[in-house]
Length: 200
Image 1 (tube, rainbow, N blue to C red):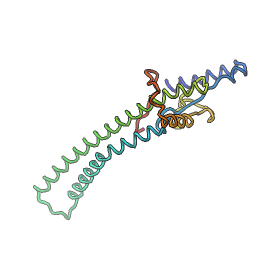
Image 2 (tube, one colour; image 1 turned 180 degrees about the vertical axis):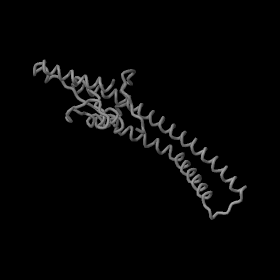
Image 3 (cartoon, one colour; image 1 turned 90 degrees about the vertical axis):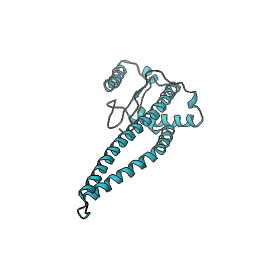
Image 4 (cartoon, rainbow, N blue to C red; image 1 turned 30 degrees about the horizontal axis):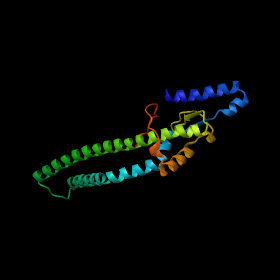
């Protein structure tokens, strides 16, 4: 429905263009933006995601060490040159099974935590970018800002490249953020666009 709605809006704009005088059209300004891409490209999001990655690095290293341990145990059990008693082999197999369950559980916990933390970061930044976009659009006199989507998942079927303001929006947001302006932006309470998953 989101894709259809955006496309329909452009089609309506095209239909109206045929009926409106040239002077009225000149006063209209419709642009597009790839909102999720803009959020990801901001210096604020990059900095916070980098800090999150550093925070999660110790857990990631522990997972790697546990995975290496599991692989070594498997290798030992598959080594025909290693003479093991039945009791020793059974004990190692039990240890391997325990380690495998531990690895699976901790890997799933790590994946869930990293996805949730990344989503929290991006949602917080997206709210600021959304609020900034409202003021940016008003200052530039845009009549409408339409979500463009991505090349692999477009929301509008066609829009000229010079209509896209994603790069300019990111640059302007970074400039005001570095100047301390982001704290003054009001947090929107509704109408927020969807934010991306870190692993899409």
